[in-house]
Each structure stands twice: as C-alpha cells, then as structure tokens.
Image (cartoon, rainbow, N blue to C red):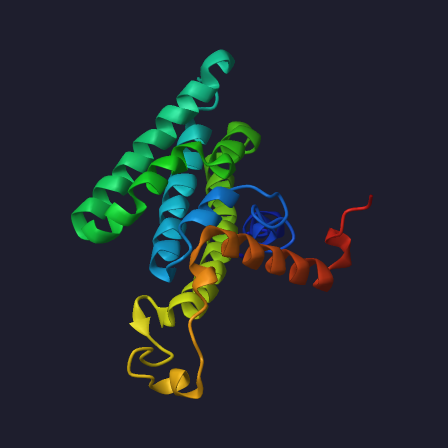
Length: 215
C-alpha cells in the first residue's frame, strides 16, 4: 500500500509549483526580499519555516476541537511564537554568527502570513497527518523560491555560494574575473530579489498558461 494517497501527495506537490505560496499566492514576499542576499541565510530560513509550519500545523490540528473560536488567533500566535523561540535558541547555540544576521527576520516568522494562513485555512479543519503534509508542502514551496533567489543573488552579486568563491578572486582577477567580469552590486540589495522573484513568476506562468489570471 502506498505511503501517501494521491490526495495526500498533492498536499506536498501542489505548493511546489501550481499553488506556490510565494509565486502564486503572493505570500511571504518580505523574507524573500530581505534575507536572500546569501544562499546560506536562505537555506536556514527555509529550514526554520519548515520546522515551524510543519510542527505548528500538527499542534493546531491536535487542539482544533478545544480552541474557542474567539481566541483562536491568539492561540495560533502563541504556538508559532513558541516554535520560533526554539528555532532562535538553536541558531544561537549552533550558528551564532548566522543567528545575528537573521535575528530580526527569524522573529518575523511569527507574523509570516503563510504560517498563519495554513493554521487558519487547513490545520483547524483537518487531522494531524494531513496538516503535517500541508505544512511540509507549503514550507518546501516557500523554501525552494528562497533558495533559487538566494543562489542567483549571491552568485551574481558576490561571486560566491555559501560564502565560498566560485567565480575566482575579484581582487587578483582570477577565474571569470580575468575576462573582465565584475560582480553586480545591484544583486545584493532588496530590489534585486523582487526582480528575480518576478522572473520566476514569469517563467512559471509561461510554462503553464492556466496560471495566468484573466483580466
């Protein structure tokens, strides 16, 4: 018997492309602009959101029948805030320098509209297993876009990936720099992220005309 039914598998597959939280639902744009100048930061943020959303969805689903509707948003905020504090403390313990870079933005996971949206739209109405799959699927869709944007911004803006030079030495003019290539400083400022996300949206809709909205 298959581990996942077709319906359950779609909970993971749909947010990766046709229902991506960033490029289709246009959610979580702020972090895509703010922390993707470095690929490492993009990966860490993607993993952090996966932990918070996957586990948070399960917790909300388990509590869904006992949460009074009038305070459900407060309960959701408490759950996500607790998980974000755990992420923040783990980063401080094992990746202190990176935690300083992401400090403000890790805290802003609490108000990430993708997380609150999935709590409200899915976890409150479904069981723990399907809620977990929904959380993993949406966080993967979010994370893939962050990693793609971070890859191109760091590569073109700094000539590095994960802080490791891959195009040569811009000072010594080795590698690609020996041909006259120069890093594009524009790529490391937030507007460049918006442009990269726009290109991804254009490519995605070009490959699937069904995603193009009718006026």
